[in-house]
Amino acid sequence: MSTTALSHQVRTALQEPLDVARLEQALQAVDDFVRECASAKEPEVLLFQLEEQLQSIHSDTITHNSKQLAVLLAVLYHLRPLLTSTSVISTWFDLVLRPALRVPQLSTPAVNHAKELIVSAAESGDERYPEKVGEFRRRLLDLYVLDAYNEGSGHDLLEWAELDKEQRERRSLWKCNLEDVLVKYGLRRPQVFNRRSSFPLDGLKDMFRISCPQ
Image 1 (cartoon, one colour):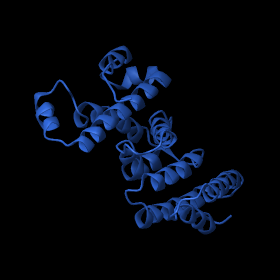
Image 2: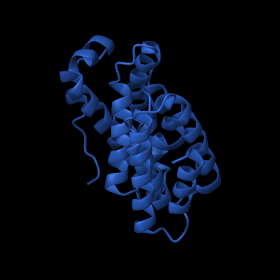
Image 3: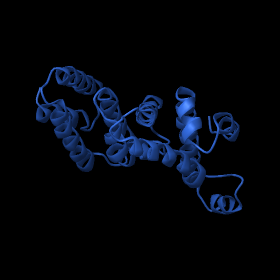
Image 4: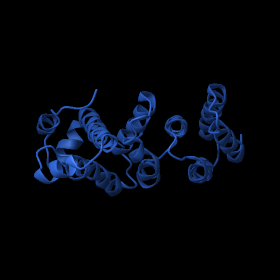
């Protein structure tokens, strides 16, 4: 299947009203594309073309609809065998994955897809761009420490008091999802985490013993 035909199926799956059958067809087409790339002469070219088309679809189609976001996350998750850590870090993290960790209405499977893509990129042993992967790991920790709500900070407490219920829910969800990502990564690659991070794994676990919304 050509990348144009595949992107058309993805775009169709995102049309309102969302339909389970259309989504299943699109995901099956993605799986077929992954298998075809395994024997293609230039799989990286095909993937590059598809990712450009998916970015265009995101720009044209995805709004604040959590169900549409879930569809795109499912597509990216099924593309996981082909996606490079560089692609996830440079393109999809800020465009799709990071926003997904802030959406209260997003389904649990969709959130898990986003987390798995992030963790996979962080634990990548990509020898071509080790600096980029290392910077991404540090960025995740920085986001947790500096960007997420800290109940021990007087400044954050004042800011928290000014937020409405929806804003508080998004901030709490962002913190807890980041926590989950970091703990998953730390448990999978403790030797890397201990070597590259200023926080030992045991200390990180202690730091993460906070209350999260259920």
